[in-house]
Amino acid sequence: MEKQKKALAEVQLEKLSECPVCKGSDFTASLTCKDYTYSQVDFSLVDCKSCGFKFTNPRPTASTIGNYYQSEDYVSHSDTQEGLVNKLYHLVRTYTLQKKLQLIFKLRGRVKKQGKTTLLDIGCGTGAFLSTCVKAGFEGRGIEPDTNARAFAQNNYGLQVDEEAALELFSAGQFDVISLWHVLEHVPDLDSRMKKIKHLLAERGHLIIAVPNCDSYDANYYGKFWAAYDVPRHLYHFTPATLAELAKRHQFKLEQVLPMVFDSFYVSMLSEQYKNGKSNFIGAIWRGFLSNLKAIKTGKQYSSQIYILRHES
Ligand SMILES: [Zn+2]
Image (cartoon, rainbow, N blue to C red; front, side, top):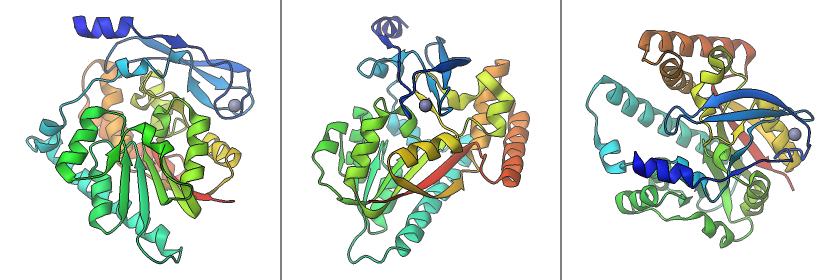
């Protein structure tokens, strides 16, 4: 507790005067959300008046936001399979890893290219997805800022994973596929990161971005208790419209939007906990189910979505 207090006292806040997507400077106040998982501190969200982009403002500076991340014990995490929830978690994880791999095979199938597919997974965490791709024959590299997660990926899977500074060392057009699975909402300098990604992506290459959708049914239902606001770690709160705007501004073609159907259940479970102070398994399953059902009707408002962007020169 003392350690946490000290870490939080060191945090510095910055107030953005420009919208990270369109550079507009007029914002309206949106929700105020609490950091339920770590500090219990409140953070405000604002909406850009010009493009509608919702973001956390003020927010911790890039050099101090690390104090809002708890370092986790990855070894025990990934090894435990006890209990129903853990068993379910592992089943879902195995299934979704295979689905992600199939997706990349499908995307690459449309591009006739000789040789191995080169993939960069930014924010690869402990490397489960990257390792699946490497085993399937891709030439995969990872970027991960967390020291412990990076070490786990290197030691456990033998993967090539570097810190963020390595992004500067890759060459132009080096990668056929760049993926960010629930990562872009954490990146402090959105504009320069998008430019860097564009630079590293081969022509006709694919950029895969998975992010929560704050226009989903579960986001609207839970409001400020919606777990995927996850302030202050989530700096941005995308919708299909604002993600499309970001893609357009960086000259990417938005090729496809795909659902992540398990996220509504997971997010609803956490949101129930935040809203009521206790878990509500049945209620969460029901909300998660309703969210997917409504999204099937609208076609693009799932709790979390995968956006497939194409490099257009
Ligand atoms: Zn804007």
